[in-house]
Image (cartoon, each protein chain N blue to C red):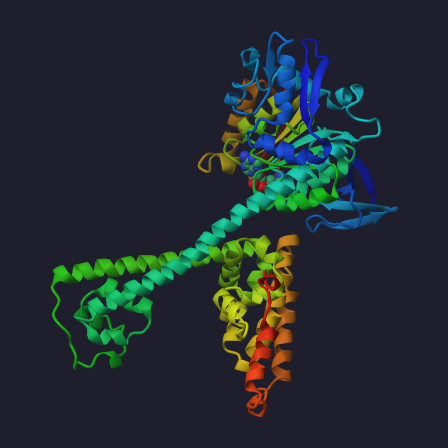
Length: 221
Length: 394
Ligand SMILES: C[S@@+](CC[C@H](N)C(=O)[O-])C[C@H]1O[C@@H](n2cnc3c(N)ncnc32)[C@H](O)[C@@H]1O
């Protein structure tokens, strides 16, 4: 079995990506666990997590450090946040999710992972959670909503450090089902640009997710 | 965690913290748009020494207008001081000795967020249960209403087509009237059994003008029947989400009735199974408490098919066993939410054991006869035996 480090805290094992399990012996979403040289790894499923899909498709900018502060919008039941929790193990991941049904699972997960901060709130109203937040190094947004770019930018302006990085997962079909995905991606990109952001990198998520694109951005000043 | 006042050069001038033990509670108050004591006192204390105070807040500005010094308040959210604090939180807290060196801000924030989330989820599940409860109760209302309306429809339509009363299925009856209308068309539809039509009792002629009205009336019953179907479907889906184990054990409708009766899933989980067993039989319970009559053996859960169809001497035993499993299932739903197929399986096994163990009714006649002499004494004794306090149940 060959294991190589891909990014800080991200490993490649036999063509899979994986993170070292912060919570030994415990699976989060039925993922595979692997023991290598006394360390336990969780195989990161690209069909369940868009970040894993982006990594497998060649993502180059990887802003998550061991002590990063992260704001995660649309955390759902915590599939992707759990891997970020493995990576930024000494950091803090603020997880915003507005569905109580999802939040119940996320709260259970957070009970076991002390670097997760669950927030039951609406990401379109970022001021709502101002009392709990600090400025963050990374904002990761995956809400699959029509106004996903706007909400992402609002959160960036309010909570990103000046040199912070934003990762925006765009799902074309939740913006407009009738338009061609490529056209939507272009439109969203120019939206980001005209509002003061620079797109550092774009990664398509095919074949893991249809009509999805990962945008990595920063402030352009 | 509290309130901080900075000057123009971002030096901390004053602060007011929430008491540590009440942190989550206070933060929730704050979110509820209430001015807290701490905020009030830091503003009051500093208003006279400052030329103006720029407040960063999510509260409605009107909350502040009755405070002393309100004319000096300006509002800006976010403001520069807030930005400064969010950029340097750990440093500011440590430098001002608000945090002890051994305190871990991350851990404090985590614990705080867990306190808040637990509270919010509780509130959310109350709301969620309320939607379910309204839906299950409205099914009851619809049943009651359609029962009445159907009675009326039959009485009305019988004037024209008395033989159709042989159709006992209410939905079919309504459908025939709505779809086909008069007797001849219904017969032509060939949807009726031969048996129904005898020609002995053809009923009165009906004019279009009259028939039209009956059909409109029947149609509204049909609408209600369809609404009930949607509601049933809705309750089923909601129950699968809220209480998968309870649904699996007793079915979603009966499960929802139990939740409705208790007021919420969480309350239901707090009841001892002896209470679950008699829920819905409160009248009998109060009679029992007052007069010492036999306590009720089963309430709502009597609707459970295996109890309804059970032999009389088994009903109570099965009800007790079921009530115990219900308590177990509900607790699982509240505390883990994970589905566990084993609960129903083990109940079914228990059910078989009960049936096997008691194939025959207990021989009570003889014993009763023997006791007849001392009947009065017995009765008194019996009363005492059954006499319990309401606290034993709730
Ligand atoms: C595609 S899922 C995210 C999956 C997750 N990122 C993962 O990989 O584990 C989108 C989530 O965003 C949530 N969501 C959508 N709009 C939101 C909003 N305005 N505020 C907060 N959460 C939102 C939805 O409830 C849903 O759980």
